[in-house]
Length: 70
Image (cartoon, rainbow, N blue to C red; front, side, top):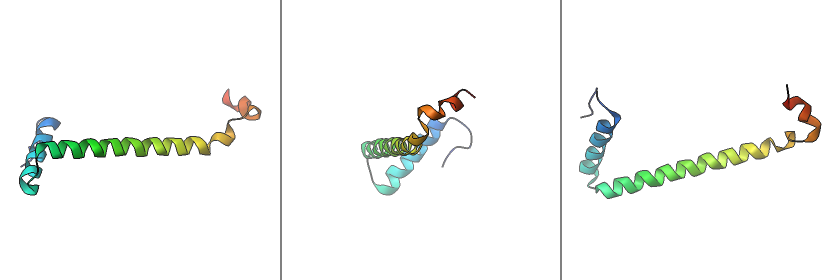
């Protein structure tokens, strides 16, 4: 049961215990999965930022520099 009040840590711990009981997994497995998901999310975010930077590269030229000061 997830508490309605309290810190996010208490909620996270409760969720961890529910996962451990229902999936018959260890705390280590949960932490490893969480870290892998976090790293994957960071890599995806970085890939999206890189793609956005490439798409705006055509606007980065000396002729358009006058608009940078507006």
